[in-house]
Every structure is written in structure tokens, then in C-alpha cells.
Image (tube, rainbow, N blue to C red):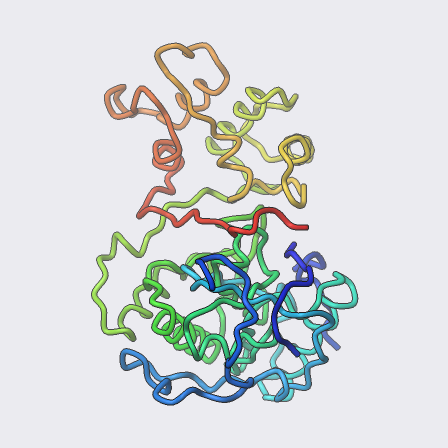
Length: 372
């Protein structure tokens, strides 16, 4: 999922991407970053930034990390957002520090041995017991300086512009433990403070990929997280700004008008599928075919933040009244008056029709381009 390649620098689930088993420089340039503090050190005066204290973060040496297998890329730019993930592993009852260390080692082993990556993919990991651990080497030292970004491997297209945080557990139908939530809030506030990231620029993995991650429950808590991080930072945000524009996540078993509209859009794109409003295996196959045709990273039949923007094309209602895409618009418009639906249905209009409109989403992507 993430790009792994050698560059200048100094350095020392579901069983998918995160599916380990538990038991001179212009912006965007890669830099060697001479003079960066060693991992675990805090530069003078950085204990507090805008009144936000650094949480206790266990560095890679502290949890027994293996050495990275290649140089860790560091970019001469600040990240502009935070991505929240879950590990999709068991919601274990062991909340100890030892359990946290084992999680970090399991993730690194999976990412290096099974994925072939140079190190852990995400920048930080939070255990169910609330322990915060450095993920990829050098993430902590670079964060404490607050000027550059360690390139991650947690979400293709976002690895240079977003800090990735993995949260231990699966949060599809369960909320995260209080200790994990408290640490997530504190860690996000510190990252926002160090890098000047707005507290509203916190996203879930599914905002950019076709994935359930970080789980329905944790994803649904992101507006609360944005609000609470803003409070820690001493900033006022309007409630409307904590609701970010997004796309619905559709998968096997779903049903309703949103599924029906997606089916018409698939047919509009030339994909043969049933149009009955039920996300059956036939619809899974159709979505997978569409994802393969459009170059999705991991075609999996889940319709999320990577494929919706491609599927929901711009529709001119005046000239396309008979098209399948226009039919999808009509289904979602329901009883709205014709004046309530714009003549040109673009991305914001689609999100409004789908019921997932909100404050604008930062769609900036990794300046290095696609994985190599």
C-alpha cells in the first residue's frame, strides 16, 4: 500500500494490509535532515507547543523494534492531516504495557516480512490500554521538531501529507476503550500543535480507500474527536466544521436507495449488474470489476472513498435525462423539488444527495505520486 524505496536520508483487518496475527530545499523535497535529534530526545523548548504537552510516547527502541531494512524517507514539508486507522485485530482484554509492545512488534513483523516494507507502515500506534508507541523509525524525533515528515506506508496517496495512527482493535460494532480514546485525543492534539494542522483535518482511512477501516463506530466518532482535539488546543470550531464531507461505505448485505443509485452508476460505467437496491454477491462482483477497470489499489468489492469519486461522475441533468447516471440522481433526489437539485451534479452535489455532505475534505495527495 505504501511506497518503499531508497532515498537520501539518515536512518537507522481483516488479514489484509494490516492483517497481522497477534499471539536546499523546496517543499516536497526529500532531505537527509542533518542535525535531527536522536530518537527519544526532545529539542529545547519543545515540551510544550501552544500549551499542548507531548504525551508519553514509547520510541522504537523502547518496544524492541527491529532495525529498518532501508533508509527511512524524510520530506522537507509538514503533513497537513491525520489519518485514523484500526488494526482490525482482536479486542483483547490485556491492557498492559507488555501487550502494547507485543502489538507493535507484531505489526512491524507483518509489514516487513509479509508486505516487504522497510519498516512499520504507520507513524504511531495506540494500544487498547492507551499506550502510545512510535511506529516507523524516526517518526517521534521528526514530530518533536515539527518541520518535516517521515514518509509512511499506511495509505497510498497520503503517506507524505498525513500522519498515520493505528489503534489496536476492531471498531465496527464496538467503541474503543476509554484509555485508547484519551490517548488518541491527546496524541492528535500534540501532532496538530507541532505541525500546525487544523483540528478539523482528522480523517479515517476509508475517506481515501475502499476499506472498512477504522471501523463504523470509530469512524462515526471522528466529529467528536475533531471537537475534543480543538478543545485541547484551545480553539473554537463550529459543529458544522466537525462534520466532513465524505462518501458512504457500501458492502455486502447493504440495501436501499444508495445501493440502487450505485448500481445504476455501475451500469452507466459499462458494468453489467443487477439494479435491485441489494448489495448481493453479484454487486460485489460488479464493484470489483469496476475497481479493476479503474485502477483501484486493492479491488475488493467494497465501495468507499477511493472508488466513489470515480463512479459518481459529473452529470448534466439537462442533456442526460435518459442516462443511468441521471436515473441515479433521480433515485437519490426522492421527493426533493427539481429546484433543490442542481442542473450539474458534481462531487459536492453527489455527497449532498448521498447524505454525506459537510465541511470540505482535504483531498491533497502524496506529491511523490503513485507507489514505485
